[in-house]
Image 1 (cartoon, rainbow, N blue to C red):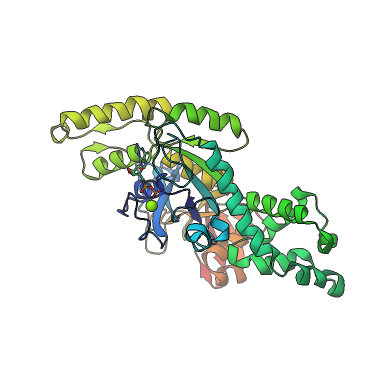
Image 2: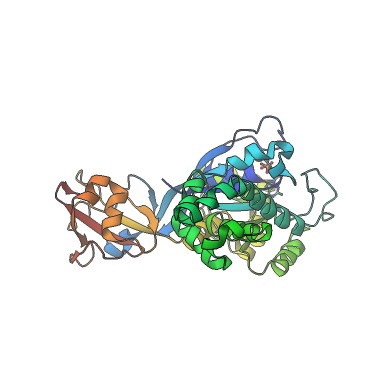
Length: 405
Ligand SMILES: Nc1nc2c(ncn2[C@@H]2O[C@H](COP(=O)(O)OP(=O)(O)O)[C@@H](O)[C@H]2O)c(=O)[nH]1
Ligand SMILES: [Mg+2]
């Protein structure tokens, strides 16, 4: 489980509620400014159509879950303590909180779309605060935080380019490895910003800022959850957010509704699979009148009107659209589609689009990559070479000199 989603936003916007709904954890909700210092970490799942239906087999997953042909694959969620304007310069212990984002591959910014909290997360009358401000400030805080890291020793580092012929991308890679920023992202940021790496010792303050902003968009992209969409003042703000930031992905969310549905599903009272746009009542006896009213409202105003609660949609978009990951099923035997213990379609891995069969072997085990001979496609049963690029929902056996998987 190598990929992590960072949950960020100001205090009381609903980060912990989102995390609890997505991970079925019970972290404390509400304002606990002095206790929520450590980030809450939970396991959520992304949802994809399992290959079991198409291949007509009954699977028994080991590293993931399959519910009636829907494969749920685990990812890590990091619920970071609330960030306030000025966080990068240490306000509200912001620096410490920002450091929790080092390991995140993508960020979900939880915004209180109902406009009931000021910039610091203090309650104000519903609809009186403009959440557009939150989107601006948060991106700025993240960029400033990264800028401070990049700026440190900048002259000395870039001096080595002229003095020793060192490459900027290598120097940056070393500097930013703790931030989970890779070569691909550094090269993309250099390309997209249009700045010349050779002249980096002459970059102005603005150049460096531009580079950092471009790198942030490539390496820690932010997608927006317009949360508390169930509240009356939220829909108008969602519309304004979408108008103001046409290039951002903004999804209406009700963390509250997702939690209600998943809790009732867990108790066996309703059947609801995260990401569904409806639920079925299994045990109506156990639902009181008021609760039934709430459920009907969730069905009409959220599930039907907005195509789901938004929680699963955001996680899926984060993983499949922003990180561009694909789901690949390794098997030991392509005829039975099992591992060596006889489990059918036991595992599914989330890997980068464009990964080759040999690189995929390395994701399973370094040994498998080093002694890679060829792969076998689980559908066609044909051999594939080391350079063969895998596609989403591929099933593959890796044959190596040290055995196979
Ligand atoms: N109406 C509504 N309230 C929510 C929603 N998500 C969170 N809240 C409420 O917002 C308050 C703060 O939530 P919490 O998750 O603790 O926020 P955090 O400080 O960002 O972790 C709590 O009272 C939650 O019940 C939502 O989707 N709808
Ligand atoms: Mg919290």
